[in-house]
Length: 248
Image (cartoon, rainbow, N blue to C red):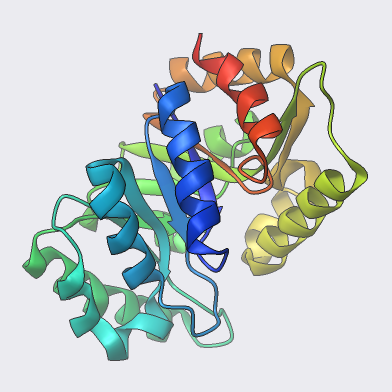
């Protein structure tokens, strides 16, 4: 099973290059870039990093609502890059969300990209066989097990805000960033998912290296192909080093 890290695309490029390069040297499989709802040009950032790190760079997940009108920008990207697509704001009807997703998916596939569906809700998971795989917004074992049971796509990758620590510990700021990230993921989940998985612990990973190792082994046995540890795990070299102990 691959273990990767996810970074915020709006952070300074020099920081992304330094920390991303450090992570790859330690043995992480890939560096993923998330895509904020703001007008940050995640595509250009990803291509710049690709020029340094090659196909070890992936995007997860592009906001379909944000990028459908700018789909031509995707032509900038090297076709070896993996892209995950997310539906965007859930204020619209499911049909509108899904139609937007499929329009952008048609573009990414025509351009030759491996394209994953980033989601956690049952209605999208039921249609996930249309994509090249699923990037679940869970690392919690129970939540992943449930998602696998309703997904029509058996190729599963998982991501969640993560704070895995070793003897060097973590700061109060690290923990607050984790809580903020978990709340954001939970807020963006469907009502069905939030009712089934109420606790914030379902949407984040907060544990020491030993406990994380056991969790990842369970996910590996369940057939998860890749785990993407999201911010704040990628926030500092200290936290990246702590997570790198999972690679041994």
